[in-house]
Length: 230
Image (cartoon, rainbow, N blue to C red; front, top):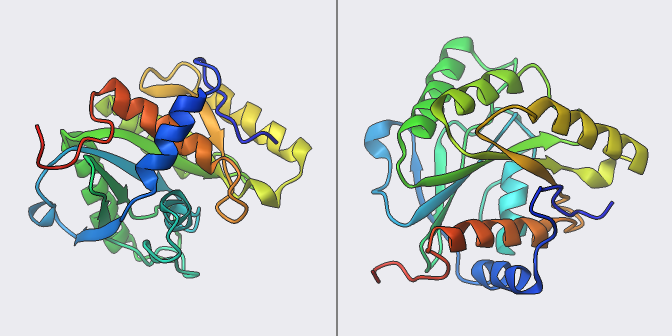
């Protein structure tokens, strides 16, 4: 398992890998927890959001990206996080941990409320540059992911698949999950034509994901520009 992006653009350059490393080697801090549209923080810079089923590893991935053990709180209880959690750096980049979805034990009324808010955020946030949709490598895409992919497609929100927990499957299983996922997103206009394979525990694929975000920000002219500077 290489942990490299299966993107049409090929591997990342050494400069992009270094840019990604430097972008995340800074003082990341908690910004805000938002439970309603009125409580969202003001839009500034660009936002990268992480979505996925409950317990897919969003918080662990954010901690691995930022090199912080407890920036994003992890929980062994699926469906516990019901707010949008924002983290900021000194640069024009904000990370957003979206509420998990698809947890059957959550009350349907509460699930509808928080997922509805998350969907509203995805559709209307002008500073949102990309959604990384996390998929557990042990299970692959499931029926719970279909409505989210549909919403992202209808809203025209750029999104890319990130396989998580790749260290918990063997090479053959990982290849099957990767091929099946690529086939499932083929033909979706808003879906980035590739995926990134990661493990928050071992660090596999983390430098690649950092480089992917660095490339995205560079294309937007935002790379490593401090907030407050125009």
